Image 1 (spheres, rainbow over the protein chains, first blue to last red):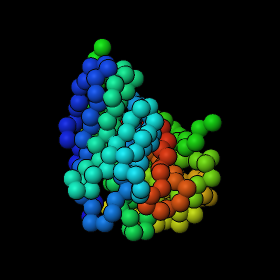
Image 2 (cartoon, rainbow over the protein chains, first blue to last red):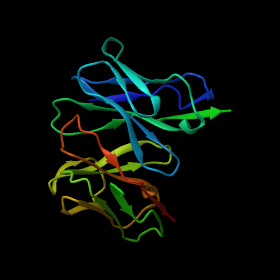
Image 3 (cartoon, helix red, strand yellow):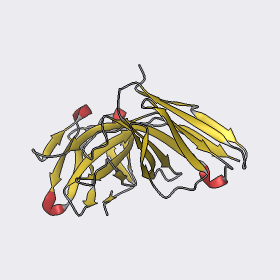
Length: 115
Length: 114
């Protein structure tokens, strides 16, 4: 069975500082990994995803994530935070060869950005 | 142009009532989903349909019944609403049902059962 752990329910950074949101996964087969962002009272929007190939994945709004199989991690980073980045971020895993797209989400990390 | 839309956006109702939530996608996708997000923001899949056929049915009370009249629509009917059904319900769609597919989410329906 697949699972996702996001360390830290809240992360606070100053505007311009590095953003690092942690995600570790558990999967018995090669995983497909996703980061979604949810702004207040809105649906989820895909930031980036890893399927195969290059382990450093670039997404929208300057975010990127690196798949590290040895660490079972897929941490999300952004070099310089903007106020508009304040939102809830969800890491999700979908197992290859399961036959269907069954996303398992982490519990989310709220990113707070202060001036 | 809204890719995945849901109606209503807010739903306040009494315990014991029956209610429906509608979802439509204009992306031409084959697969649609219903998720429940609880008060702690935890998201869990409830159902998935591929080409109008039910393919995923998680452990959900049978008071919840999805219906897909065509590939572009997936509705959720809930009978005998309970307090614990209060949550945000998200509809999503993907091109296919394969594991690597990106799911596109609607704006959510906020259900409050009193």
